[in-house]
Image (tube, rainbow, N blue to C red; front, side, top):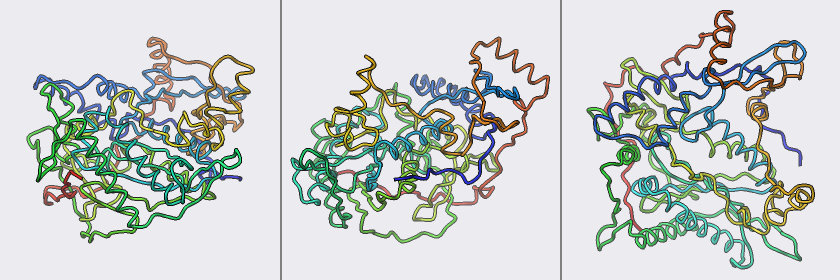
Length: 505
């Protein structure tokens, strides 16, 4: 099957991004030190991995911290390419890079020519805070969720678990539309099962789940998670209530920030504990119940989006959506009063379209979104798991056990086989239709990297020379983003932006 990649219609010329001129960068640069100072007055500090996230973000895309020298062999036109931070928290540029690479991997190597349905599971607010505080329980909870959905798919296909299997790729998203800490799962399940017939893998498609299937599933998932958490000693239940038993550590400065973020509250400043200011510019809508949406006890399961086997472009758009970065700079703006305003991607049912923060509270929201180190945010299950015996057979890349590529590789090399990721040039070409190997002056494809500059003294000499020559590498022609929302928020009421949740099963 020939697939047309999601590229722009016209080829664009590469122009170096200058993060120091963006609103997000300026907010962090100006207010992050003030935020740290406020924490120090309370004899608190951020965890080291969160501090490193901010430090690396402030270096991302800045020529003063190192760059590559790229030159055209034909016309000798030269340009500088700054290094990126490669962090997973809130950097939009590195998040976009990772989004493009993840979507390419899934569409070309994993989910190639299979119908795929997206299952989205949202959790009760207390459970979001629990998993943010104790990420070690995340894997077991995700196993519970996957087993429940996979079993339902296998049974609807008319098989037993021993007779068939299915596969899924799960993205753990830690953010909500309002920059709140919202741990939820986007799961891409095969819309069918894999069976073994005459020594070969066969795929059988199934019908879409109905509303009864969804209600039964979310009830099973919530009940099993509650039982697991009770056995782990993390929740307590009595006759009337179920509540979270989350130990509070006074020395943990990140937990209060996460708790405020997950509950849509302000974490710093004179209004600490109050609800985040919300702007309602649309009329409220009545809640609707769809056939492939089920809710119970704060758990919400949705499965209304499917990409068929011939819809490769739709699948890539879906993969990019679930792997998108946490913050969109296009939806970020400043009000005349100096508040940070963030536009929701989709208005809430009560008409809320924007949320507003003080600059310090905005920095606290970014800190709460940073994932802990060594936490894998992308998981593969079933036939796509790394230990699956049929993974090499059902995936286009043939990676995994019994892989023909692995056998061929071992003949010529004693090193383990690793699939190569997309290069930076390939990402630019796929996402923005920018060919970095083409020179914008002579338009020939002969651009090469000639040096990697990391020494501070050499960096300063090169940048000083460029500045004296008034070359475009050091131009300051970018401006602050314009206001995107009404300028005065003080006249609007504090609208509730999400219903309260009850935890239990």
